Length: 242
Image 1 (tube, one colour):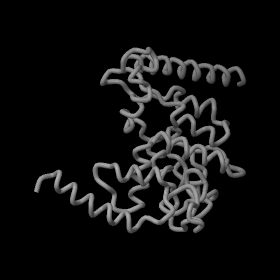
Image 2 (tube, rainbow, N blue to C red):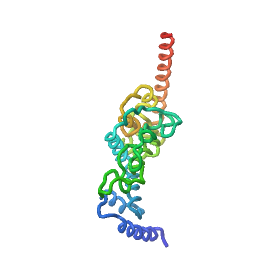
Image 3 (cartoon, rainbow, N blue to C red):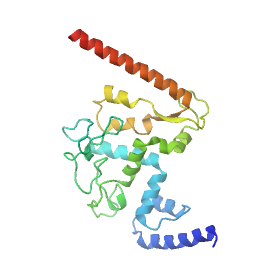
Image 4 (tube, one colour):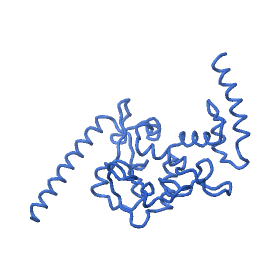
């Protein structure tokens, strides 16, 4: 059997399963995307997952919007460390609802703090209440991956920039790299008091850019000089105070 015939047979079976398992109320963009995929997902949950994977920018915007609705819990401050739920380093995005003392429990997303509904959706389209077995929105899973590994979305970010270097405006080369406009060390050292979830903008699309390697090297060199000057100023201030 040819591959095209195998795919057609598999898609017919998957479409039948998807049709029988999909409730009467279901996000139409997700269903349209699922039926147009090369390989049709056989279950609604897989259709939702595939939709958000294909729309990481929408997932990023939605995750930050949901976090803005939750706001930071009272008493929370951005910390790093080995304790459960804390980011290991300042390069990891802050997520207060992943910390045990601020967790809202089953049925709420540990990234944005909002209720998680059927199929990992962010709205209760079915009037069924939160899904007590879920702790992530499907969109927030995709956004979290973008924030932690933006280089995995290189092609998408290049397309958003019309394949032009964000620094020079010239053509992006194959060796172009993903960069944070405001470096994360500077966010940690100078903007740590920014209210959450506005902090998430520094990991999301507003702070991501694709730049050619030579421009990236020059930017990194300037950032290194900046860090050196900052350390020297701190040492001088301590010496003066002493």
